[in-house]
Image 1 (cartoon, rainbow, N blue to C red):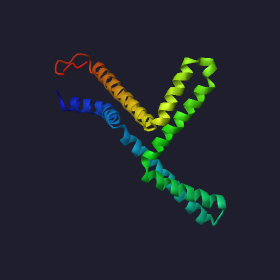
Image 2 (cartoon, rainbow, N blue to C red; image 1 turned 45 degrees about the vertical axis):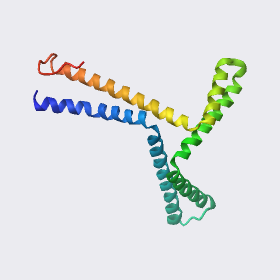
Image 3 (cartoon, rainbow, N blue to C red; image 1 turned 90 degrees about the horizontal axis):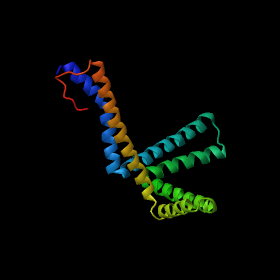
Image 4 (tube, rainbow, N blue to C red; image 1 turned 30 degrees about the vertical axis):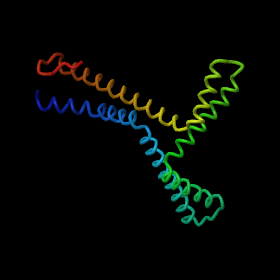
Length: 173
């Protein structure tokens, strides 16, 4: 096989490969993704607080709401960077409570489905980290499927553009 064709196939498969590997990492270790996202959110909130502080000093506005907003953003950003899994746990509690409330509201109308919502909500309240893990695991599965589908699609398109069957290419499709 020529080097140009091999290089073209590598470039076609780079993004699908990255998607597939990232999906495997998310599937096998969903807490790492949750931790990373919470830390990134903490950095963004902290930087918003710094921006508010710079804006207040530059405009020489010492308004109470600007000072309070700055303090809240700075402290929340630091807290999120120090306790990244706390947001995931809180998210599980909130989603669980909302499911329980919605299940109670729909109990007369939907019966069995409402009971299932209530049970799921109670489970999430009792096991709040489950939400984060399930969501990131599902995202990993979707990324793996998208990477595989993209690789197959790109390889088929490249094969058709090359003029069909080339005896020097291993037919993996």
